[in-house]
Length: 177
Image (cartoon, rainbow, N blue to C red; front, side, top):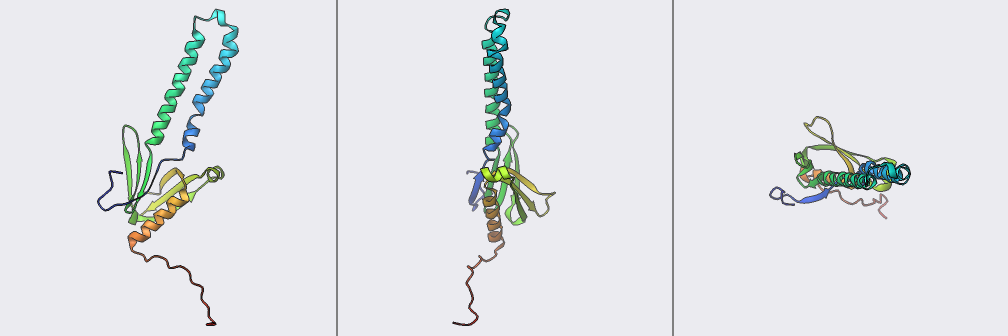
């Protein structure tokens, strides 16, 4: 990653979960299915009444529209990036107009994860980050492995604040035996 600050180390970098792509492609799939059904039922029965090659042009047009839709969804998915470094959290969105939100790691006060049942099964969720001085929580939606991201945020905030690393728990024996 070429846009790191001097002395900054990359911890995690992710795009939204692939389920975002699946949620966005149902419209073109339904459109193609409707055209195929119409092509082999209604349009097949009225083939002689329709202009020459109407079925072919209609099918190709809908497939091209569905393909264009898929390309746009893919580009939008690729253009959203969640980056965690040892100094900051950066949320980048947008294709033509780029928007970046930067949260210094030492300003993070809380990180909360939310996962639906479906999200737990597929491994994605939402991380809400509360930062000092911010107007509400910053939401990282459809984040793969949100628990890992949250834990890494806490580890980086503790390192940044200079807190000593937690010592492993040693069982005590009060009897001295």
